Length: 579
Ligand SMILES: Nc1ncnc2c1ncn2[C@@H]1O[C@H](COP(=O)(O)OP(=O)(O)OP(=O)(O)O)[C@@H](O)[C@H]1O
Image 1 (cartoon, rainbow, N blue to C red):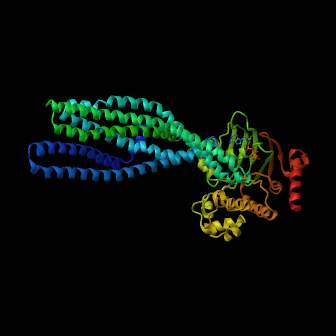
Image 2 (cartoon, rainbow, N blue to C red):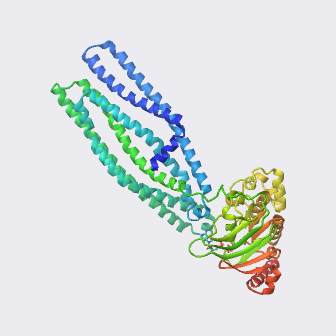
């Protein structure tokens, strides 16, 4: 389906508004010819034939016509705004819904600023093509037809003179549109680039300040901004040439009508009243033509925006987001990885992973950085689909399972303890919308977070700032543990934070984690020896392979990689304790 047809489908969702809008627009257009007709009658009947008593009725009709036209225009604007906002709302909502259904892999390859530009800027822009383009375009075409018919009924030769510039205008518009599409695409792309950088830099403002990188970053931003300026100026330059040329072609029509009209009057082939009618109505012929040029310009930029929005809407959803075998609730939490291999791109990330977590067991994943620990956890949430082997939860193959039913039984505490820029309550309710205050406080108690939340200025209703910036790292971690506790999932995925906290906070977090893991199957990407020691099974990973498996004591006895890691970690813990 082409872009315009697809956009049109959104208008069809509000047939009453769209029809009302069109009726007002058509009625307004038809009223355009009243004034020139009345002017012509005033000249011929009142002035030339001396029927002075007709002056007042004629003037009254003209006044009524103007009043009706402006009243219809008022209605048209109101209906237009409602339709416009309804369509923007629908489009934005569809786009947001789509974004939530896209696979995580899609986001890996996108910049947040780019996606935000599409929702915040491209949607309103494509709507302009939709409402203004279709409505104004139809009115303009209708007006050209109505006025042309009126002119031909008055004087065919003069009408031809008035229409003489039309073919040149159409040809010029065709060539302008052909070349302008690319210029508009460049503007959208440059806007993306600038917004993406802005988004990134605002998120990383602390890094910029701490590295005193304001100057180079400003330079970098100005480069993006300047690229946008150049792309926009190119569009404007082309438009300046095009619109001025079009205006000049229109003027030729005026000159022709005036010259030929006067010639005909001199040679008694026409009357003054006819020329008056032409000169008062001819604007109504050229005005829609110039509006069509502006619409053409707007349509080009709207189409570029629409293409980008549809590119997202056309992307395939995550597979089995809402279909497949449902995992019975509550799950037992028996997880088996059998010979699983996976790669993000060409290079294998995980190779022949073999592991099992019985219900209630804790499995610790340790190993060097980049070994593939988070990837194992990401496969279990089905953020990514494994390429080979099998993963089962309670005997059901993961890639045949309904994703939502799977994720509803998994609690994922990520290393960065992401919090939304909202209240503590809102952040906790993400886990369970129906949680009561009592449930929240219980979870906060178990997560050792109740104390500090009570001391916040508004308790549960305190805003935590972007990514929880108003809280300390340890507080953020405990809030995210409380969030997982509210969800109360049978399976827990825990990516322990590596950031060092003081020994008191460390103990609080450790206790919170123990409360959280109780009676759940837990996969822990462990960085704390205290966590690892309690694990039912420890897997040591290197370059995507499990190279050592066993309990803590067994692996220490083996005196391999794990034992070496422990010696280093113990050293670190000892040093921390000494401090
Ligand atoms: N989204 C992704 N797209 C492409 N490659 C990725 C992606 N995520 C991770 N990788 C790569 O996959 C490999 C394994 O990464 P993973 O995050 O699983 O390691 P890890 O053991 O958890 O490391 P760390 O302890 O440092 O967090 C790394 O080489 C990493 O660069």
